Image 1 (cartoon, rainbow, N blue to C red):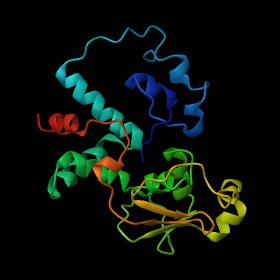
Image 2: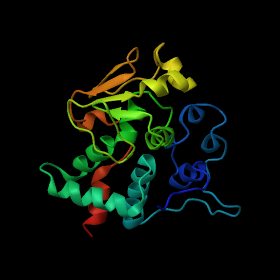
Image 3: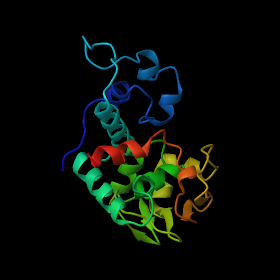
Length: 208
């Protein structure tokens, strides 16, 4: 399976905005984008005024890279969003938010989506009591996402979670850090999704 293996800080610099791909580090002065907000590359040109297509493309790339989704998979999400009732752009963001790796991140069980994806792949996460190691698994209302008890006693980061997390949990999720589990109380509404993405530009891009 293909995956991005280069420095993720290059992605933030390419998109010209923080995507918070390294978790807590992105909030410090060590953030590469804070220190050097120019496009990547030794002789990278200054940012020029983009065309309409360029603006739409950058918005799509920003969304794709924020959630760690490859091109083919992102397009499949869009096609699924088109088939759903409602506004295609909002449906697309809702599907991305409902990915298991994103939910683990949103619950505060991981400091970044990349780390959350790793936790899922390594089998540390359960859904309704059953181990799920597929990061793209789409959660539904009422499902309980938890950390395996065996993992909770071995992984240091999970041990400290029982003391609580400083991360603000989104309104559509409920979390109990003592039990190390969270519940999907509702499907995410557009106002609950805080990623700086203009989804209508993505719809316009795919509608060309």
